[in-house]
Amino acid sequence: MAKILFISDNYLNESLGIMCLSSYLKINNHKVDIALLSEYKRVDDLLKFIKEISCDIIGFSVMTPQASAFQHISKIIKERTHHTIIWGGPHCTLMPDETSKDGYVDIICVGEGEESLLELMNRIDARKAFDDIPNLMIKKKDRWIRNELCNLEADLDKYPFPDRALYYNRYPFLRNFLLKKFVTMRGCPYDCFYCFAPNLKEIYKGKGALVRRHSVEYVIAEIESVISKYPTKVLHFSDDTFNTNKDWVMNFLASYKENIALPFTCNITVVGIDEEMVKGLKAAGCSGVAFGLESGIESVRFKVLNKKFKNLDFIKTSRLLHRYKIKFIISMLFCLPNETIENVVESICFANLMKPWGIRASILKIFKGTKLAKVLLERGLCEAVGEFTYQPKDLHNNHSKIKNILWAGNLLIKFPMLLPFAKKILYFPAHCLAVPLIMLSYWTDVIYHKIPLVQALGYFWSARKVFIKGLASEQADIYRKIAP
Ligand code: B12
Ligand code: SF4
Image (cartoon, rainbow, N blue to C red):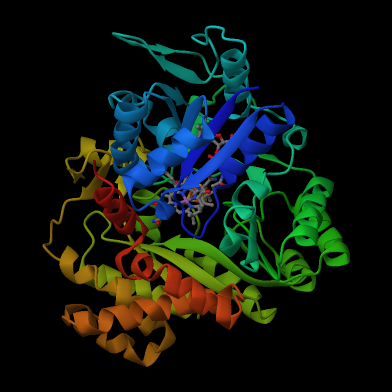
């Protein structure tokens, strides 16, 4: 039996990746523990905990915005404890070479991790060499050994339910939070250039079908098991495109209605959805859906972002959602290449035509390795910000104004009578209004997810700095505080 300690930091979001790995390791007789960095404001406390629980290996699940902070903490752990450190997750899959340049990571997992991490733990337990395990990159003195990727597991039901007890036994706030999240599928059939889904297709070419889903029975049994053990009033399906595969969705909705019947939200695409499905969603208890519009200008969506959904698809789907009284939230990206203030206003006006419940406005961050990064770099249209990210060049010198959309976006959507003044609003240096208006956006999300008021307030309070400064910057602050 070997033991791994995962160090994680998703605040109020338990990591499904870690929970999936944990349950698979546990049914194969290994031990797993977790430490949330937000709990350890002093580095000595974290190091003391690491010593106390005595593990064989320390694992991090990394998204790109977390990478620099995790480098910092990995360095401290490596220098002070000499533990073997393994990184996995989307960042490592997207940028294995960049990850390997970091001097404090010993093993990198590229792609899905269940089988390779299990094999690694078995070998550690048996004190055998582990240089040849598929999906793993292993650091040697002067080089990295890079092993082949193994085929994708076609039968996701082979894996046990994610190990929620890992988080919930230690963190009552997560256990008691009435919204619980589920993932029913892996992979996405689309190819948006700013996303890491197309990269997955490339690296897994010839290794089996990328888009896979659990059986309806598996998902229903998982939900039943969660709601029988933990307080749950609302569900969210974190799948990228919940409406993929109509037959599966219709069967699932029928079974969900019969066996679960709790309100839920999910992420959809505006194609592959029709009236029958929207009706089924409503009947099963779907209270809200979210989908990505990204840009309200069709040509930008098609040519720059490679998101090939027509304006008409958005209009048709939004009408259906209104007909069946399902709230919807639209994700939008701003500061796109060559974007002007006029483009932003046009984009928002198109979003407003759909009369959404709210929008989630983000500033485009282009991760290294994505197709968008490659295309824009070739055309000299983006520049590096930090080690892993690019941003489009500010050709019209207007990004500072466009960024005001972060607080103004929901104001314009909730009060469309302000749209004729949208440009003036974006020019307005209303920083004093920014915090309450960003709160309006979060509040829009709270109501969308049907989170009970008391918990929503508790959530706001415990993560107030995250809400105001953003998750990544709050994480960076915490790690700065735990500098050696
Ligand atoms: C749910 C979700 C979230 C949740 C929870 C995240 C979590 N870690 O669970 C929340 C809301 C917190 C979130 C936030 C963000 N997210 Co997010 N999120 C997702 C989503 C939709 C599903 C993740 C998931 O649960 N997958 C299912 C599990 C089973 O897969 P997995 O996590 O990849 O884990 C497997 C492998 O990666 C590997 N593995 C993972 N960790 C480890 C660790 C070790 C040691 C090993 C060996 C293996 C290993 O094994 C696992 C099992 O096979 C993905 C999209 C997707 N389809 O993956 C985006 C995604 C992960 N998010 C992404 C992004 C960009 C963000 C944000 C930056 C968005 C934003 N603008 O704020 C923030 C980052 C917040 C931060 N902490 O800084 C990107 C990451 C891209 C990148 N380059 O890193 C993704 C891939 C979306 C995309 N399509 O591009 N997100
Ligand atoms: S639909 Fe969503 S998950 Fe799929 S490629 Fe586009 S952005 Fe990525």
